[in-house]
Image 1 (cartoon, helix red, strand yellow):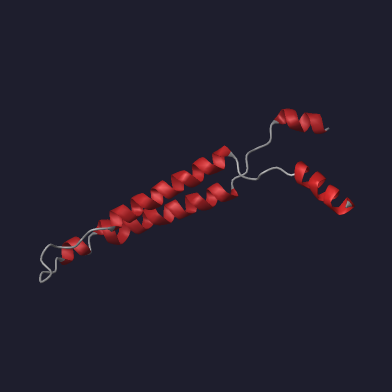
Image 2: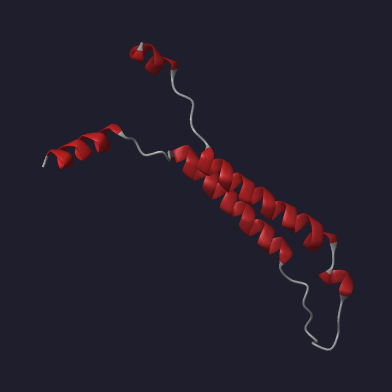
Amino acid sequence: MNYFRFTNFAMNKLSFPFTKINAYIILGGLVVVLFGYILMSGGGSADPNTFNAEELFSARRITVAPIVVLLGYITIGVGIMYRAKKNQSSEIEKN
């Protein structure tokens, strides 16, 4: 029984590591990734017998879109790892 009381006490002391700022950063990263995949899409033609290499291998699809997707994934990683700075007032109270 004491074990359960201790865990409840320990759980009350812990706070959830993600804040609203983390959620906004992660959501922004997801939007950037989605935008990158939209930039990467396309390049097809209506006629299956024709091949348009200029449209398929354009700089937008080969260079820009993967960089945008990579930046989006980096932003998601930053959103997961971001920790807000503590207020100075809370540091004064601890001392």
